[in-house]
Image (cartoon, rainbow, N blue to C red; front, side, top):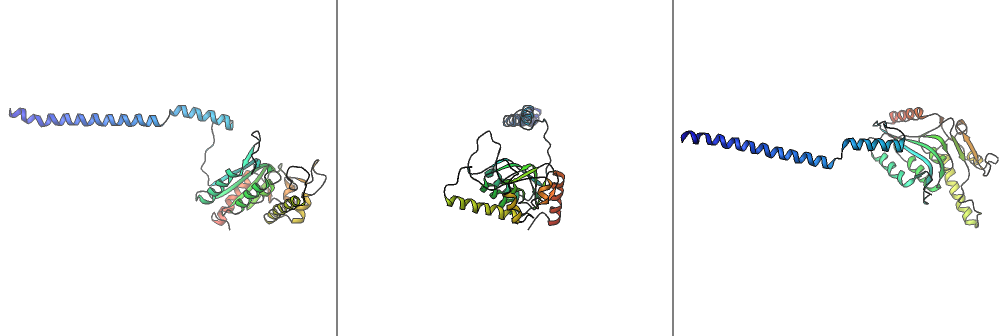
Length: 267
């Protein structure tokens, strides 16, 4: 009897230990099952991502690099108050404004690169974007790739420094509505005031004079169905509209230069 009672605590201890181990194992299995339910099959997700990359970007692997420079793309038509047809490639200004606010607020972002290939678009939307970019406290650089036409020229000059690719073009022409005949004097006066806003902004943010810009705007003979001027690469630099002919490397080097000179802030 004494031997029986002396072995009882050990027996209960073994039973208790086995019970704890079984409970732990059950808990681990449930947790793993929960993780599997929350996260889909990793291989399946990777395959879906590759298919998406092929559809959207035409390549399997997308280069990933955490940079302190934010790249803002202005392509197609600048869409403002009117929704354009679905077949048009557009840049919606209501999508760009939150990005600009995030650039200003995010301490990890030290500079902004604006890449343009646009045919123009809504004048007030383009001016709104240009005014916001010009008011940023961080270094900004723009580069015209392909085209920076119409109101795109205003966005191109709103940064601290501007570049244009050697083969890129910029069309400078007056503001119009839909091409219909202006019926009342008030409509003409409104267009004239809006034209003055564009001219004043471009002159203040570039090295071109108001007389030269208006001369380019109302020149006859360059465009078949309109008045205005087409500037190709170096022509835009020679007239003072753009600062320098260059590419992506030059634009990035300029941002780093401005960033280092100002400590990431521009007054």
